[in-house]
Image 1: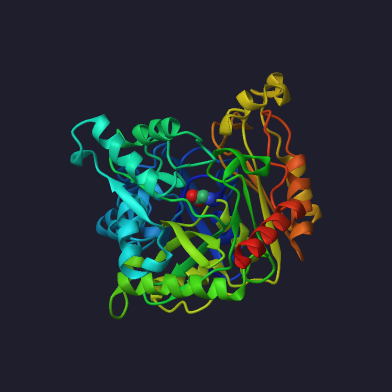
Image 2: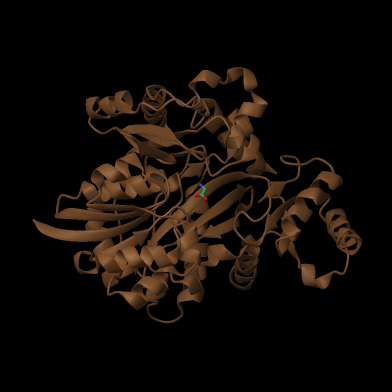
Length: 469
Ligand code: GLY
């Protein structure tokens, strides 16, 4: 079999899922070179070479790529930071390794303000009302407060506050979810405003979905829809997180979406793609330049935000059930001839297990945390055994964990996810939870309502109500 050398820039279980997809190739012997945020036990086991670069800085990743240039055929990037920092530009300039991710110019995830202007130009009907607050425009806190409150008057306080840069200050805050008074809102606003531009936009009522697409620069290939669970605690309570879990239904739609919703999303994304691409092909866009959060209202989808990378955990819903060999898909992306990708007719559910400090759990529910368990290693062996038992219908992907002296320890962020694959969402959920419950140690916890029947039915009823208004 033909050998292929692949550079994977990895952060968390998304990276492990990518490594897994390559190592399962039936058409190639994949030799994987992983530049990782930590000693991820899964990646360490699968990689031909593994290097830890804790801040995933471009210079160090480039050096690693350069060292193995002769053995690497292409590279792919999971996390946003190196993409925004121009990793593709640097690796392609310094080596002959083509990279699968957008160039710095098209890493639109770097600025939410630039995204809003782009949507306003191309698809204004799906852009929420918004205003940008630029520290350069105001000479005092009192002055900007007056303008913010005037905008809140116009939107009846129902707003979302978003920093321009990813995760600057306190990140996104939403009226009614993260704050209930103007004073709280303004405090959140200021925490971000200290770092730069802030957007205050109309809060949209509806149900969220995640749209992802592969792109070879010429074609956009939409992937099936997924639903992310951003809030830390059950019933969508608590602070926003990177995502506590996600689900995908059999087929391309989610249970609360109509075919028309999906068609509209694709139409919107095609318009944005054309605007960015211009005439012909634009290889600078290749990778997953579109991972966009939509919110479905009674009158169709609105766009919440745009990312230039695969979603975590949303890509974990898709890679395990992709019919094509992932190496072939990557070669087609590089050749500019990826026109479609097929998926098995399966549902998937991802549940994350996370440490006690994540999402402020230990403060919100101190009585639930077994403190004696907190520093203990995490035992993945039983979950892996289940994976074998169920013939890979359970996939265990470590995230913010590291190997130390042959044992696995959870670090600070999301620790490990389990993907369940089945003929319907509830069976996929049962498998995901069976795997999650088999993981012991580290006082890890998880949301118990990811893809639950009740949660999904609530979304369906919510959309029915909104569509009747
Ligand atoms: N699921 C959220 C993210 O990947 O940003």
